[in-house]
Length: 246
Image (cartoon, rainbow, N blue to C red; front, side, top):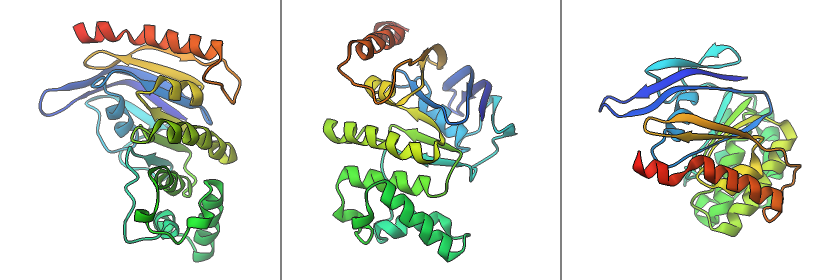
């Protein structure tokens, strides 16, 4: 599905963000990228989204090189980025202009039902809570039925209770069509709740330090001993003290 080979990225300023990153993500798999700030997680996601161009290596989706934004790829950012003058329904439907009107409406209503926002379809973004606004952003990404969904710390601005609710809700929504998910997060529990594999990036420029396969059944209980053992393993892999010295 997604193949990344020996990817590197250096900006015009001379800052090296990534070095020799290789990764494969299989169809329907959920993979989380974790690492300290500045290790290149979001840069990697932007390259996969077609928003940045690598300086070395390559990234492919279904064996096609990524050369720009791709309709098979949806993106959910840290902020909802909703258009304030459009209703919830109109925001979700916005990217479907090339489809027949009947299909636009059918897809929009179906995804609003999945994210639990049918009753708020005519509301404006200013009338929504932060969690509801992010649900709209997820719905807008899913309505195009992408094969790959990229999430760049989508719940980082939310309070802990809303964040946990939306993590569980994302899995519920994902189960309908099971798109491939690639998630960037600083939250180790979020990575463990959601992902089949957690990829640990370290260094400046960022490199893959370790990949941890999460062999826990879903739904995952954050307080279980096995869950906490995985969290401890990720903390040791990240080794924040080593990052600070590097």
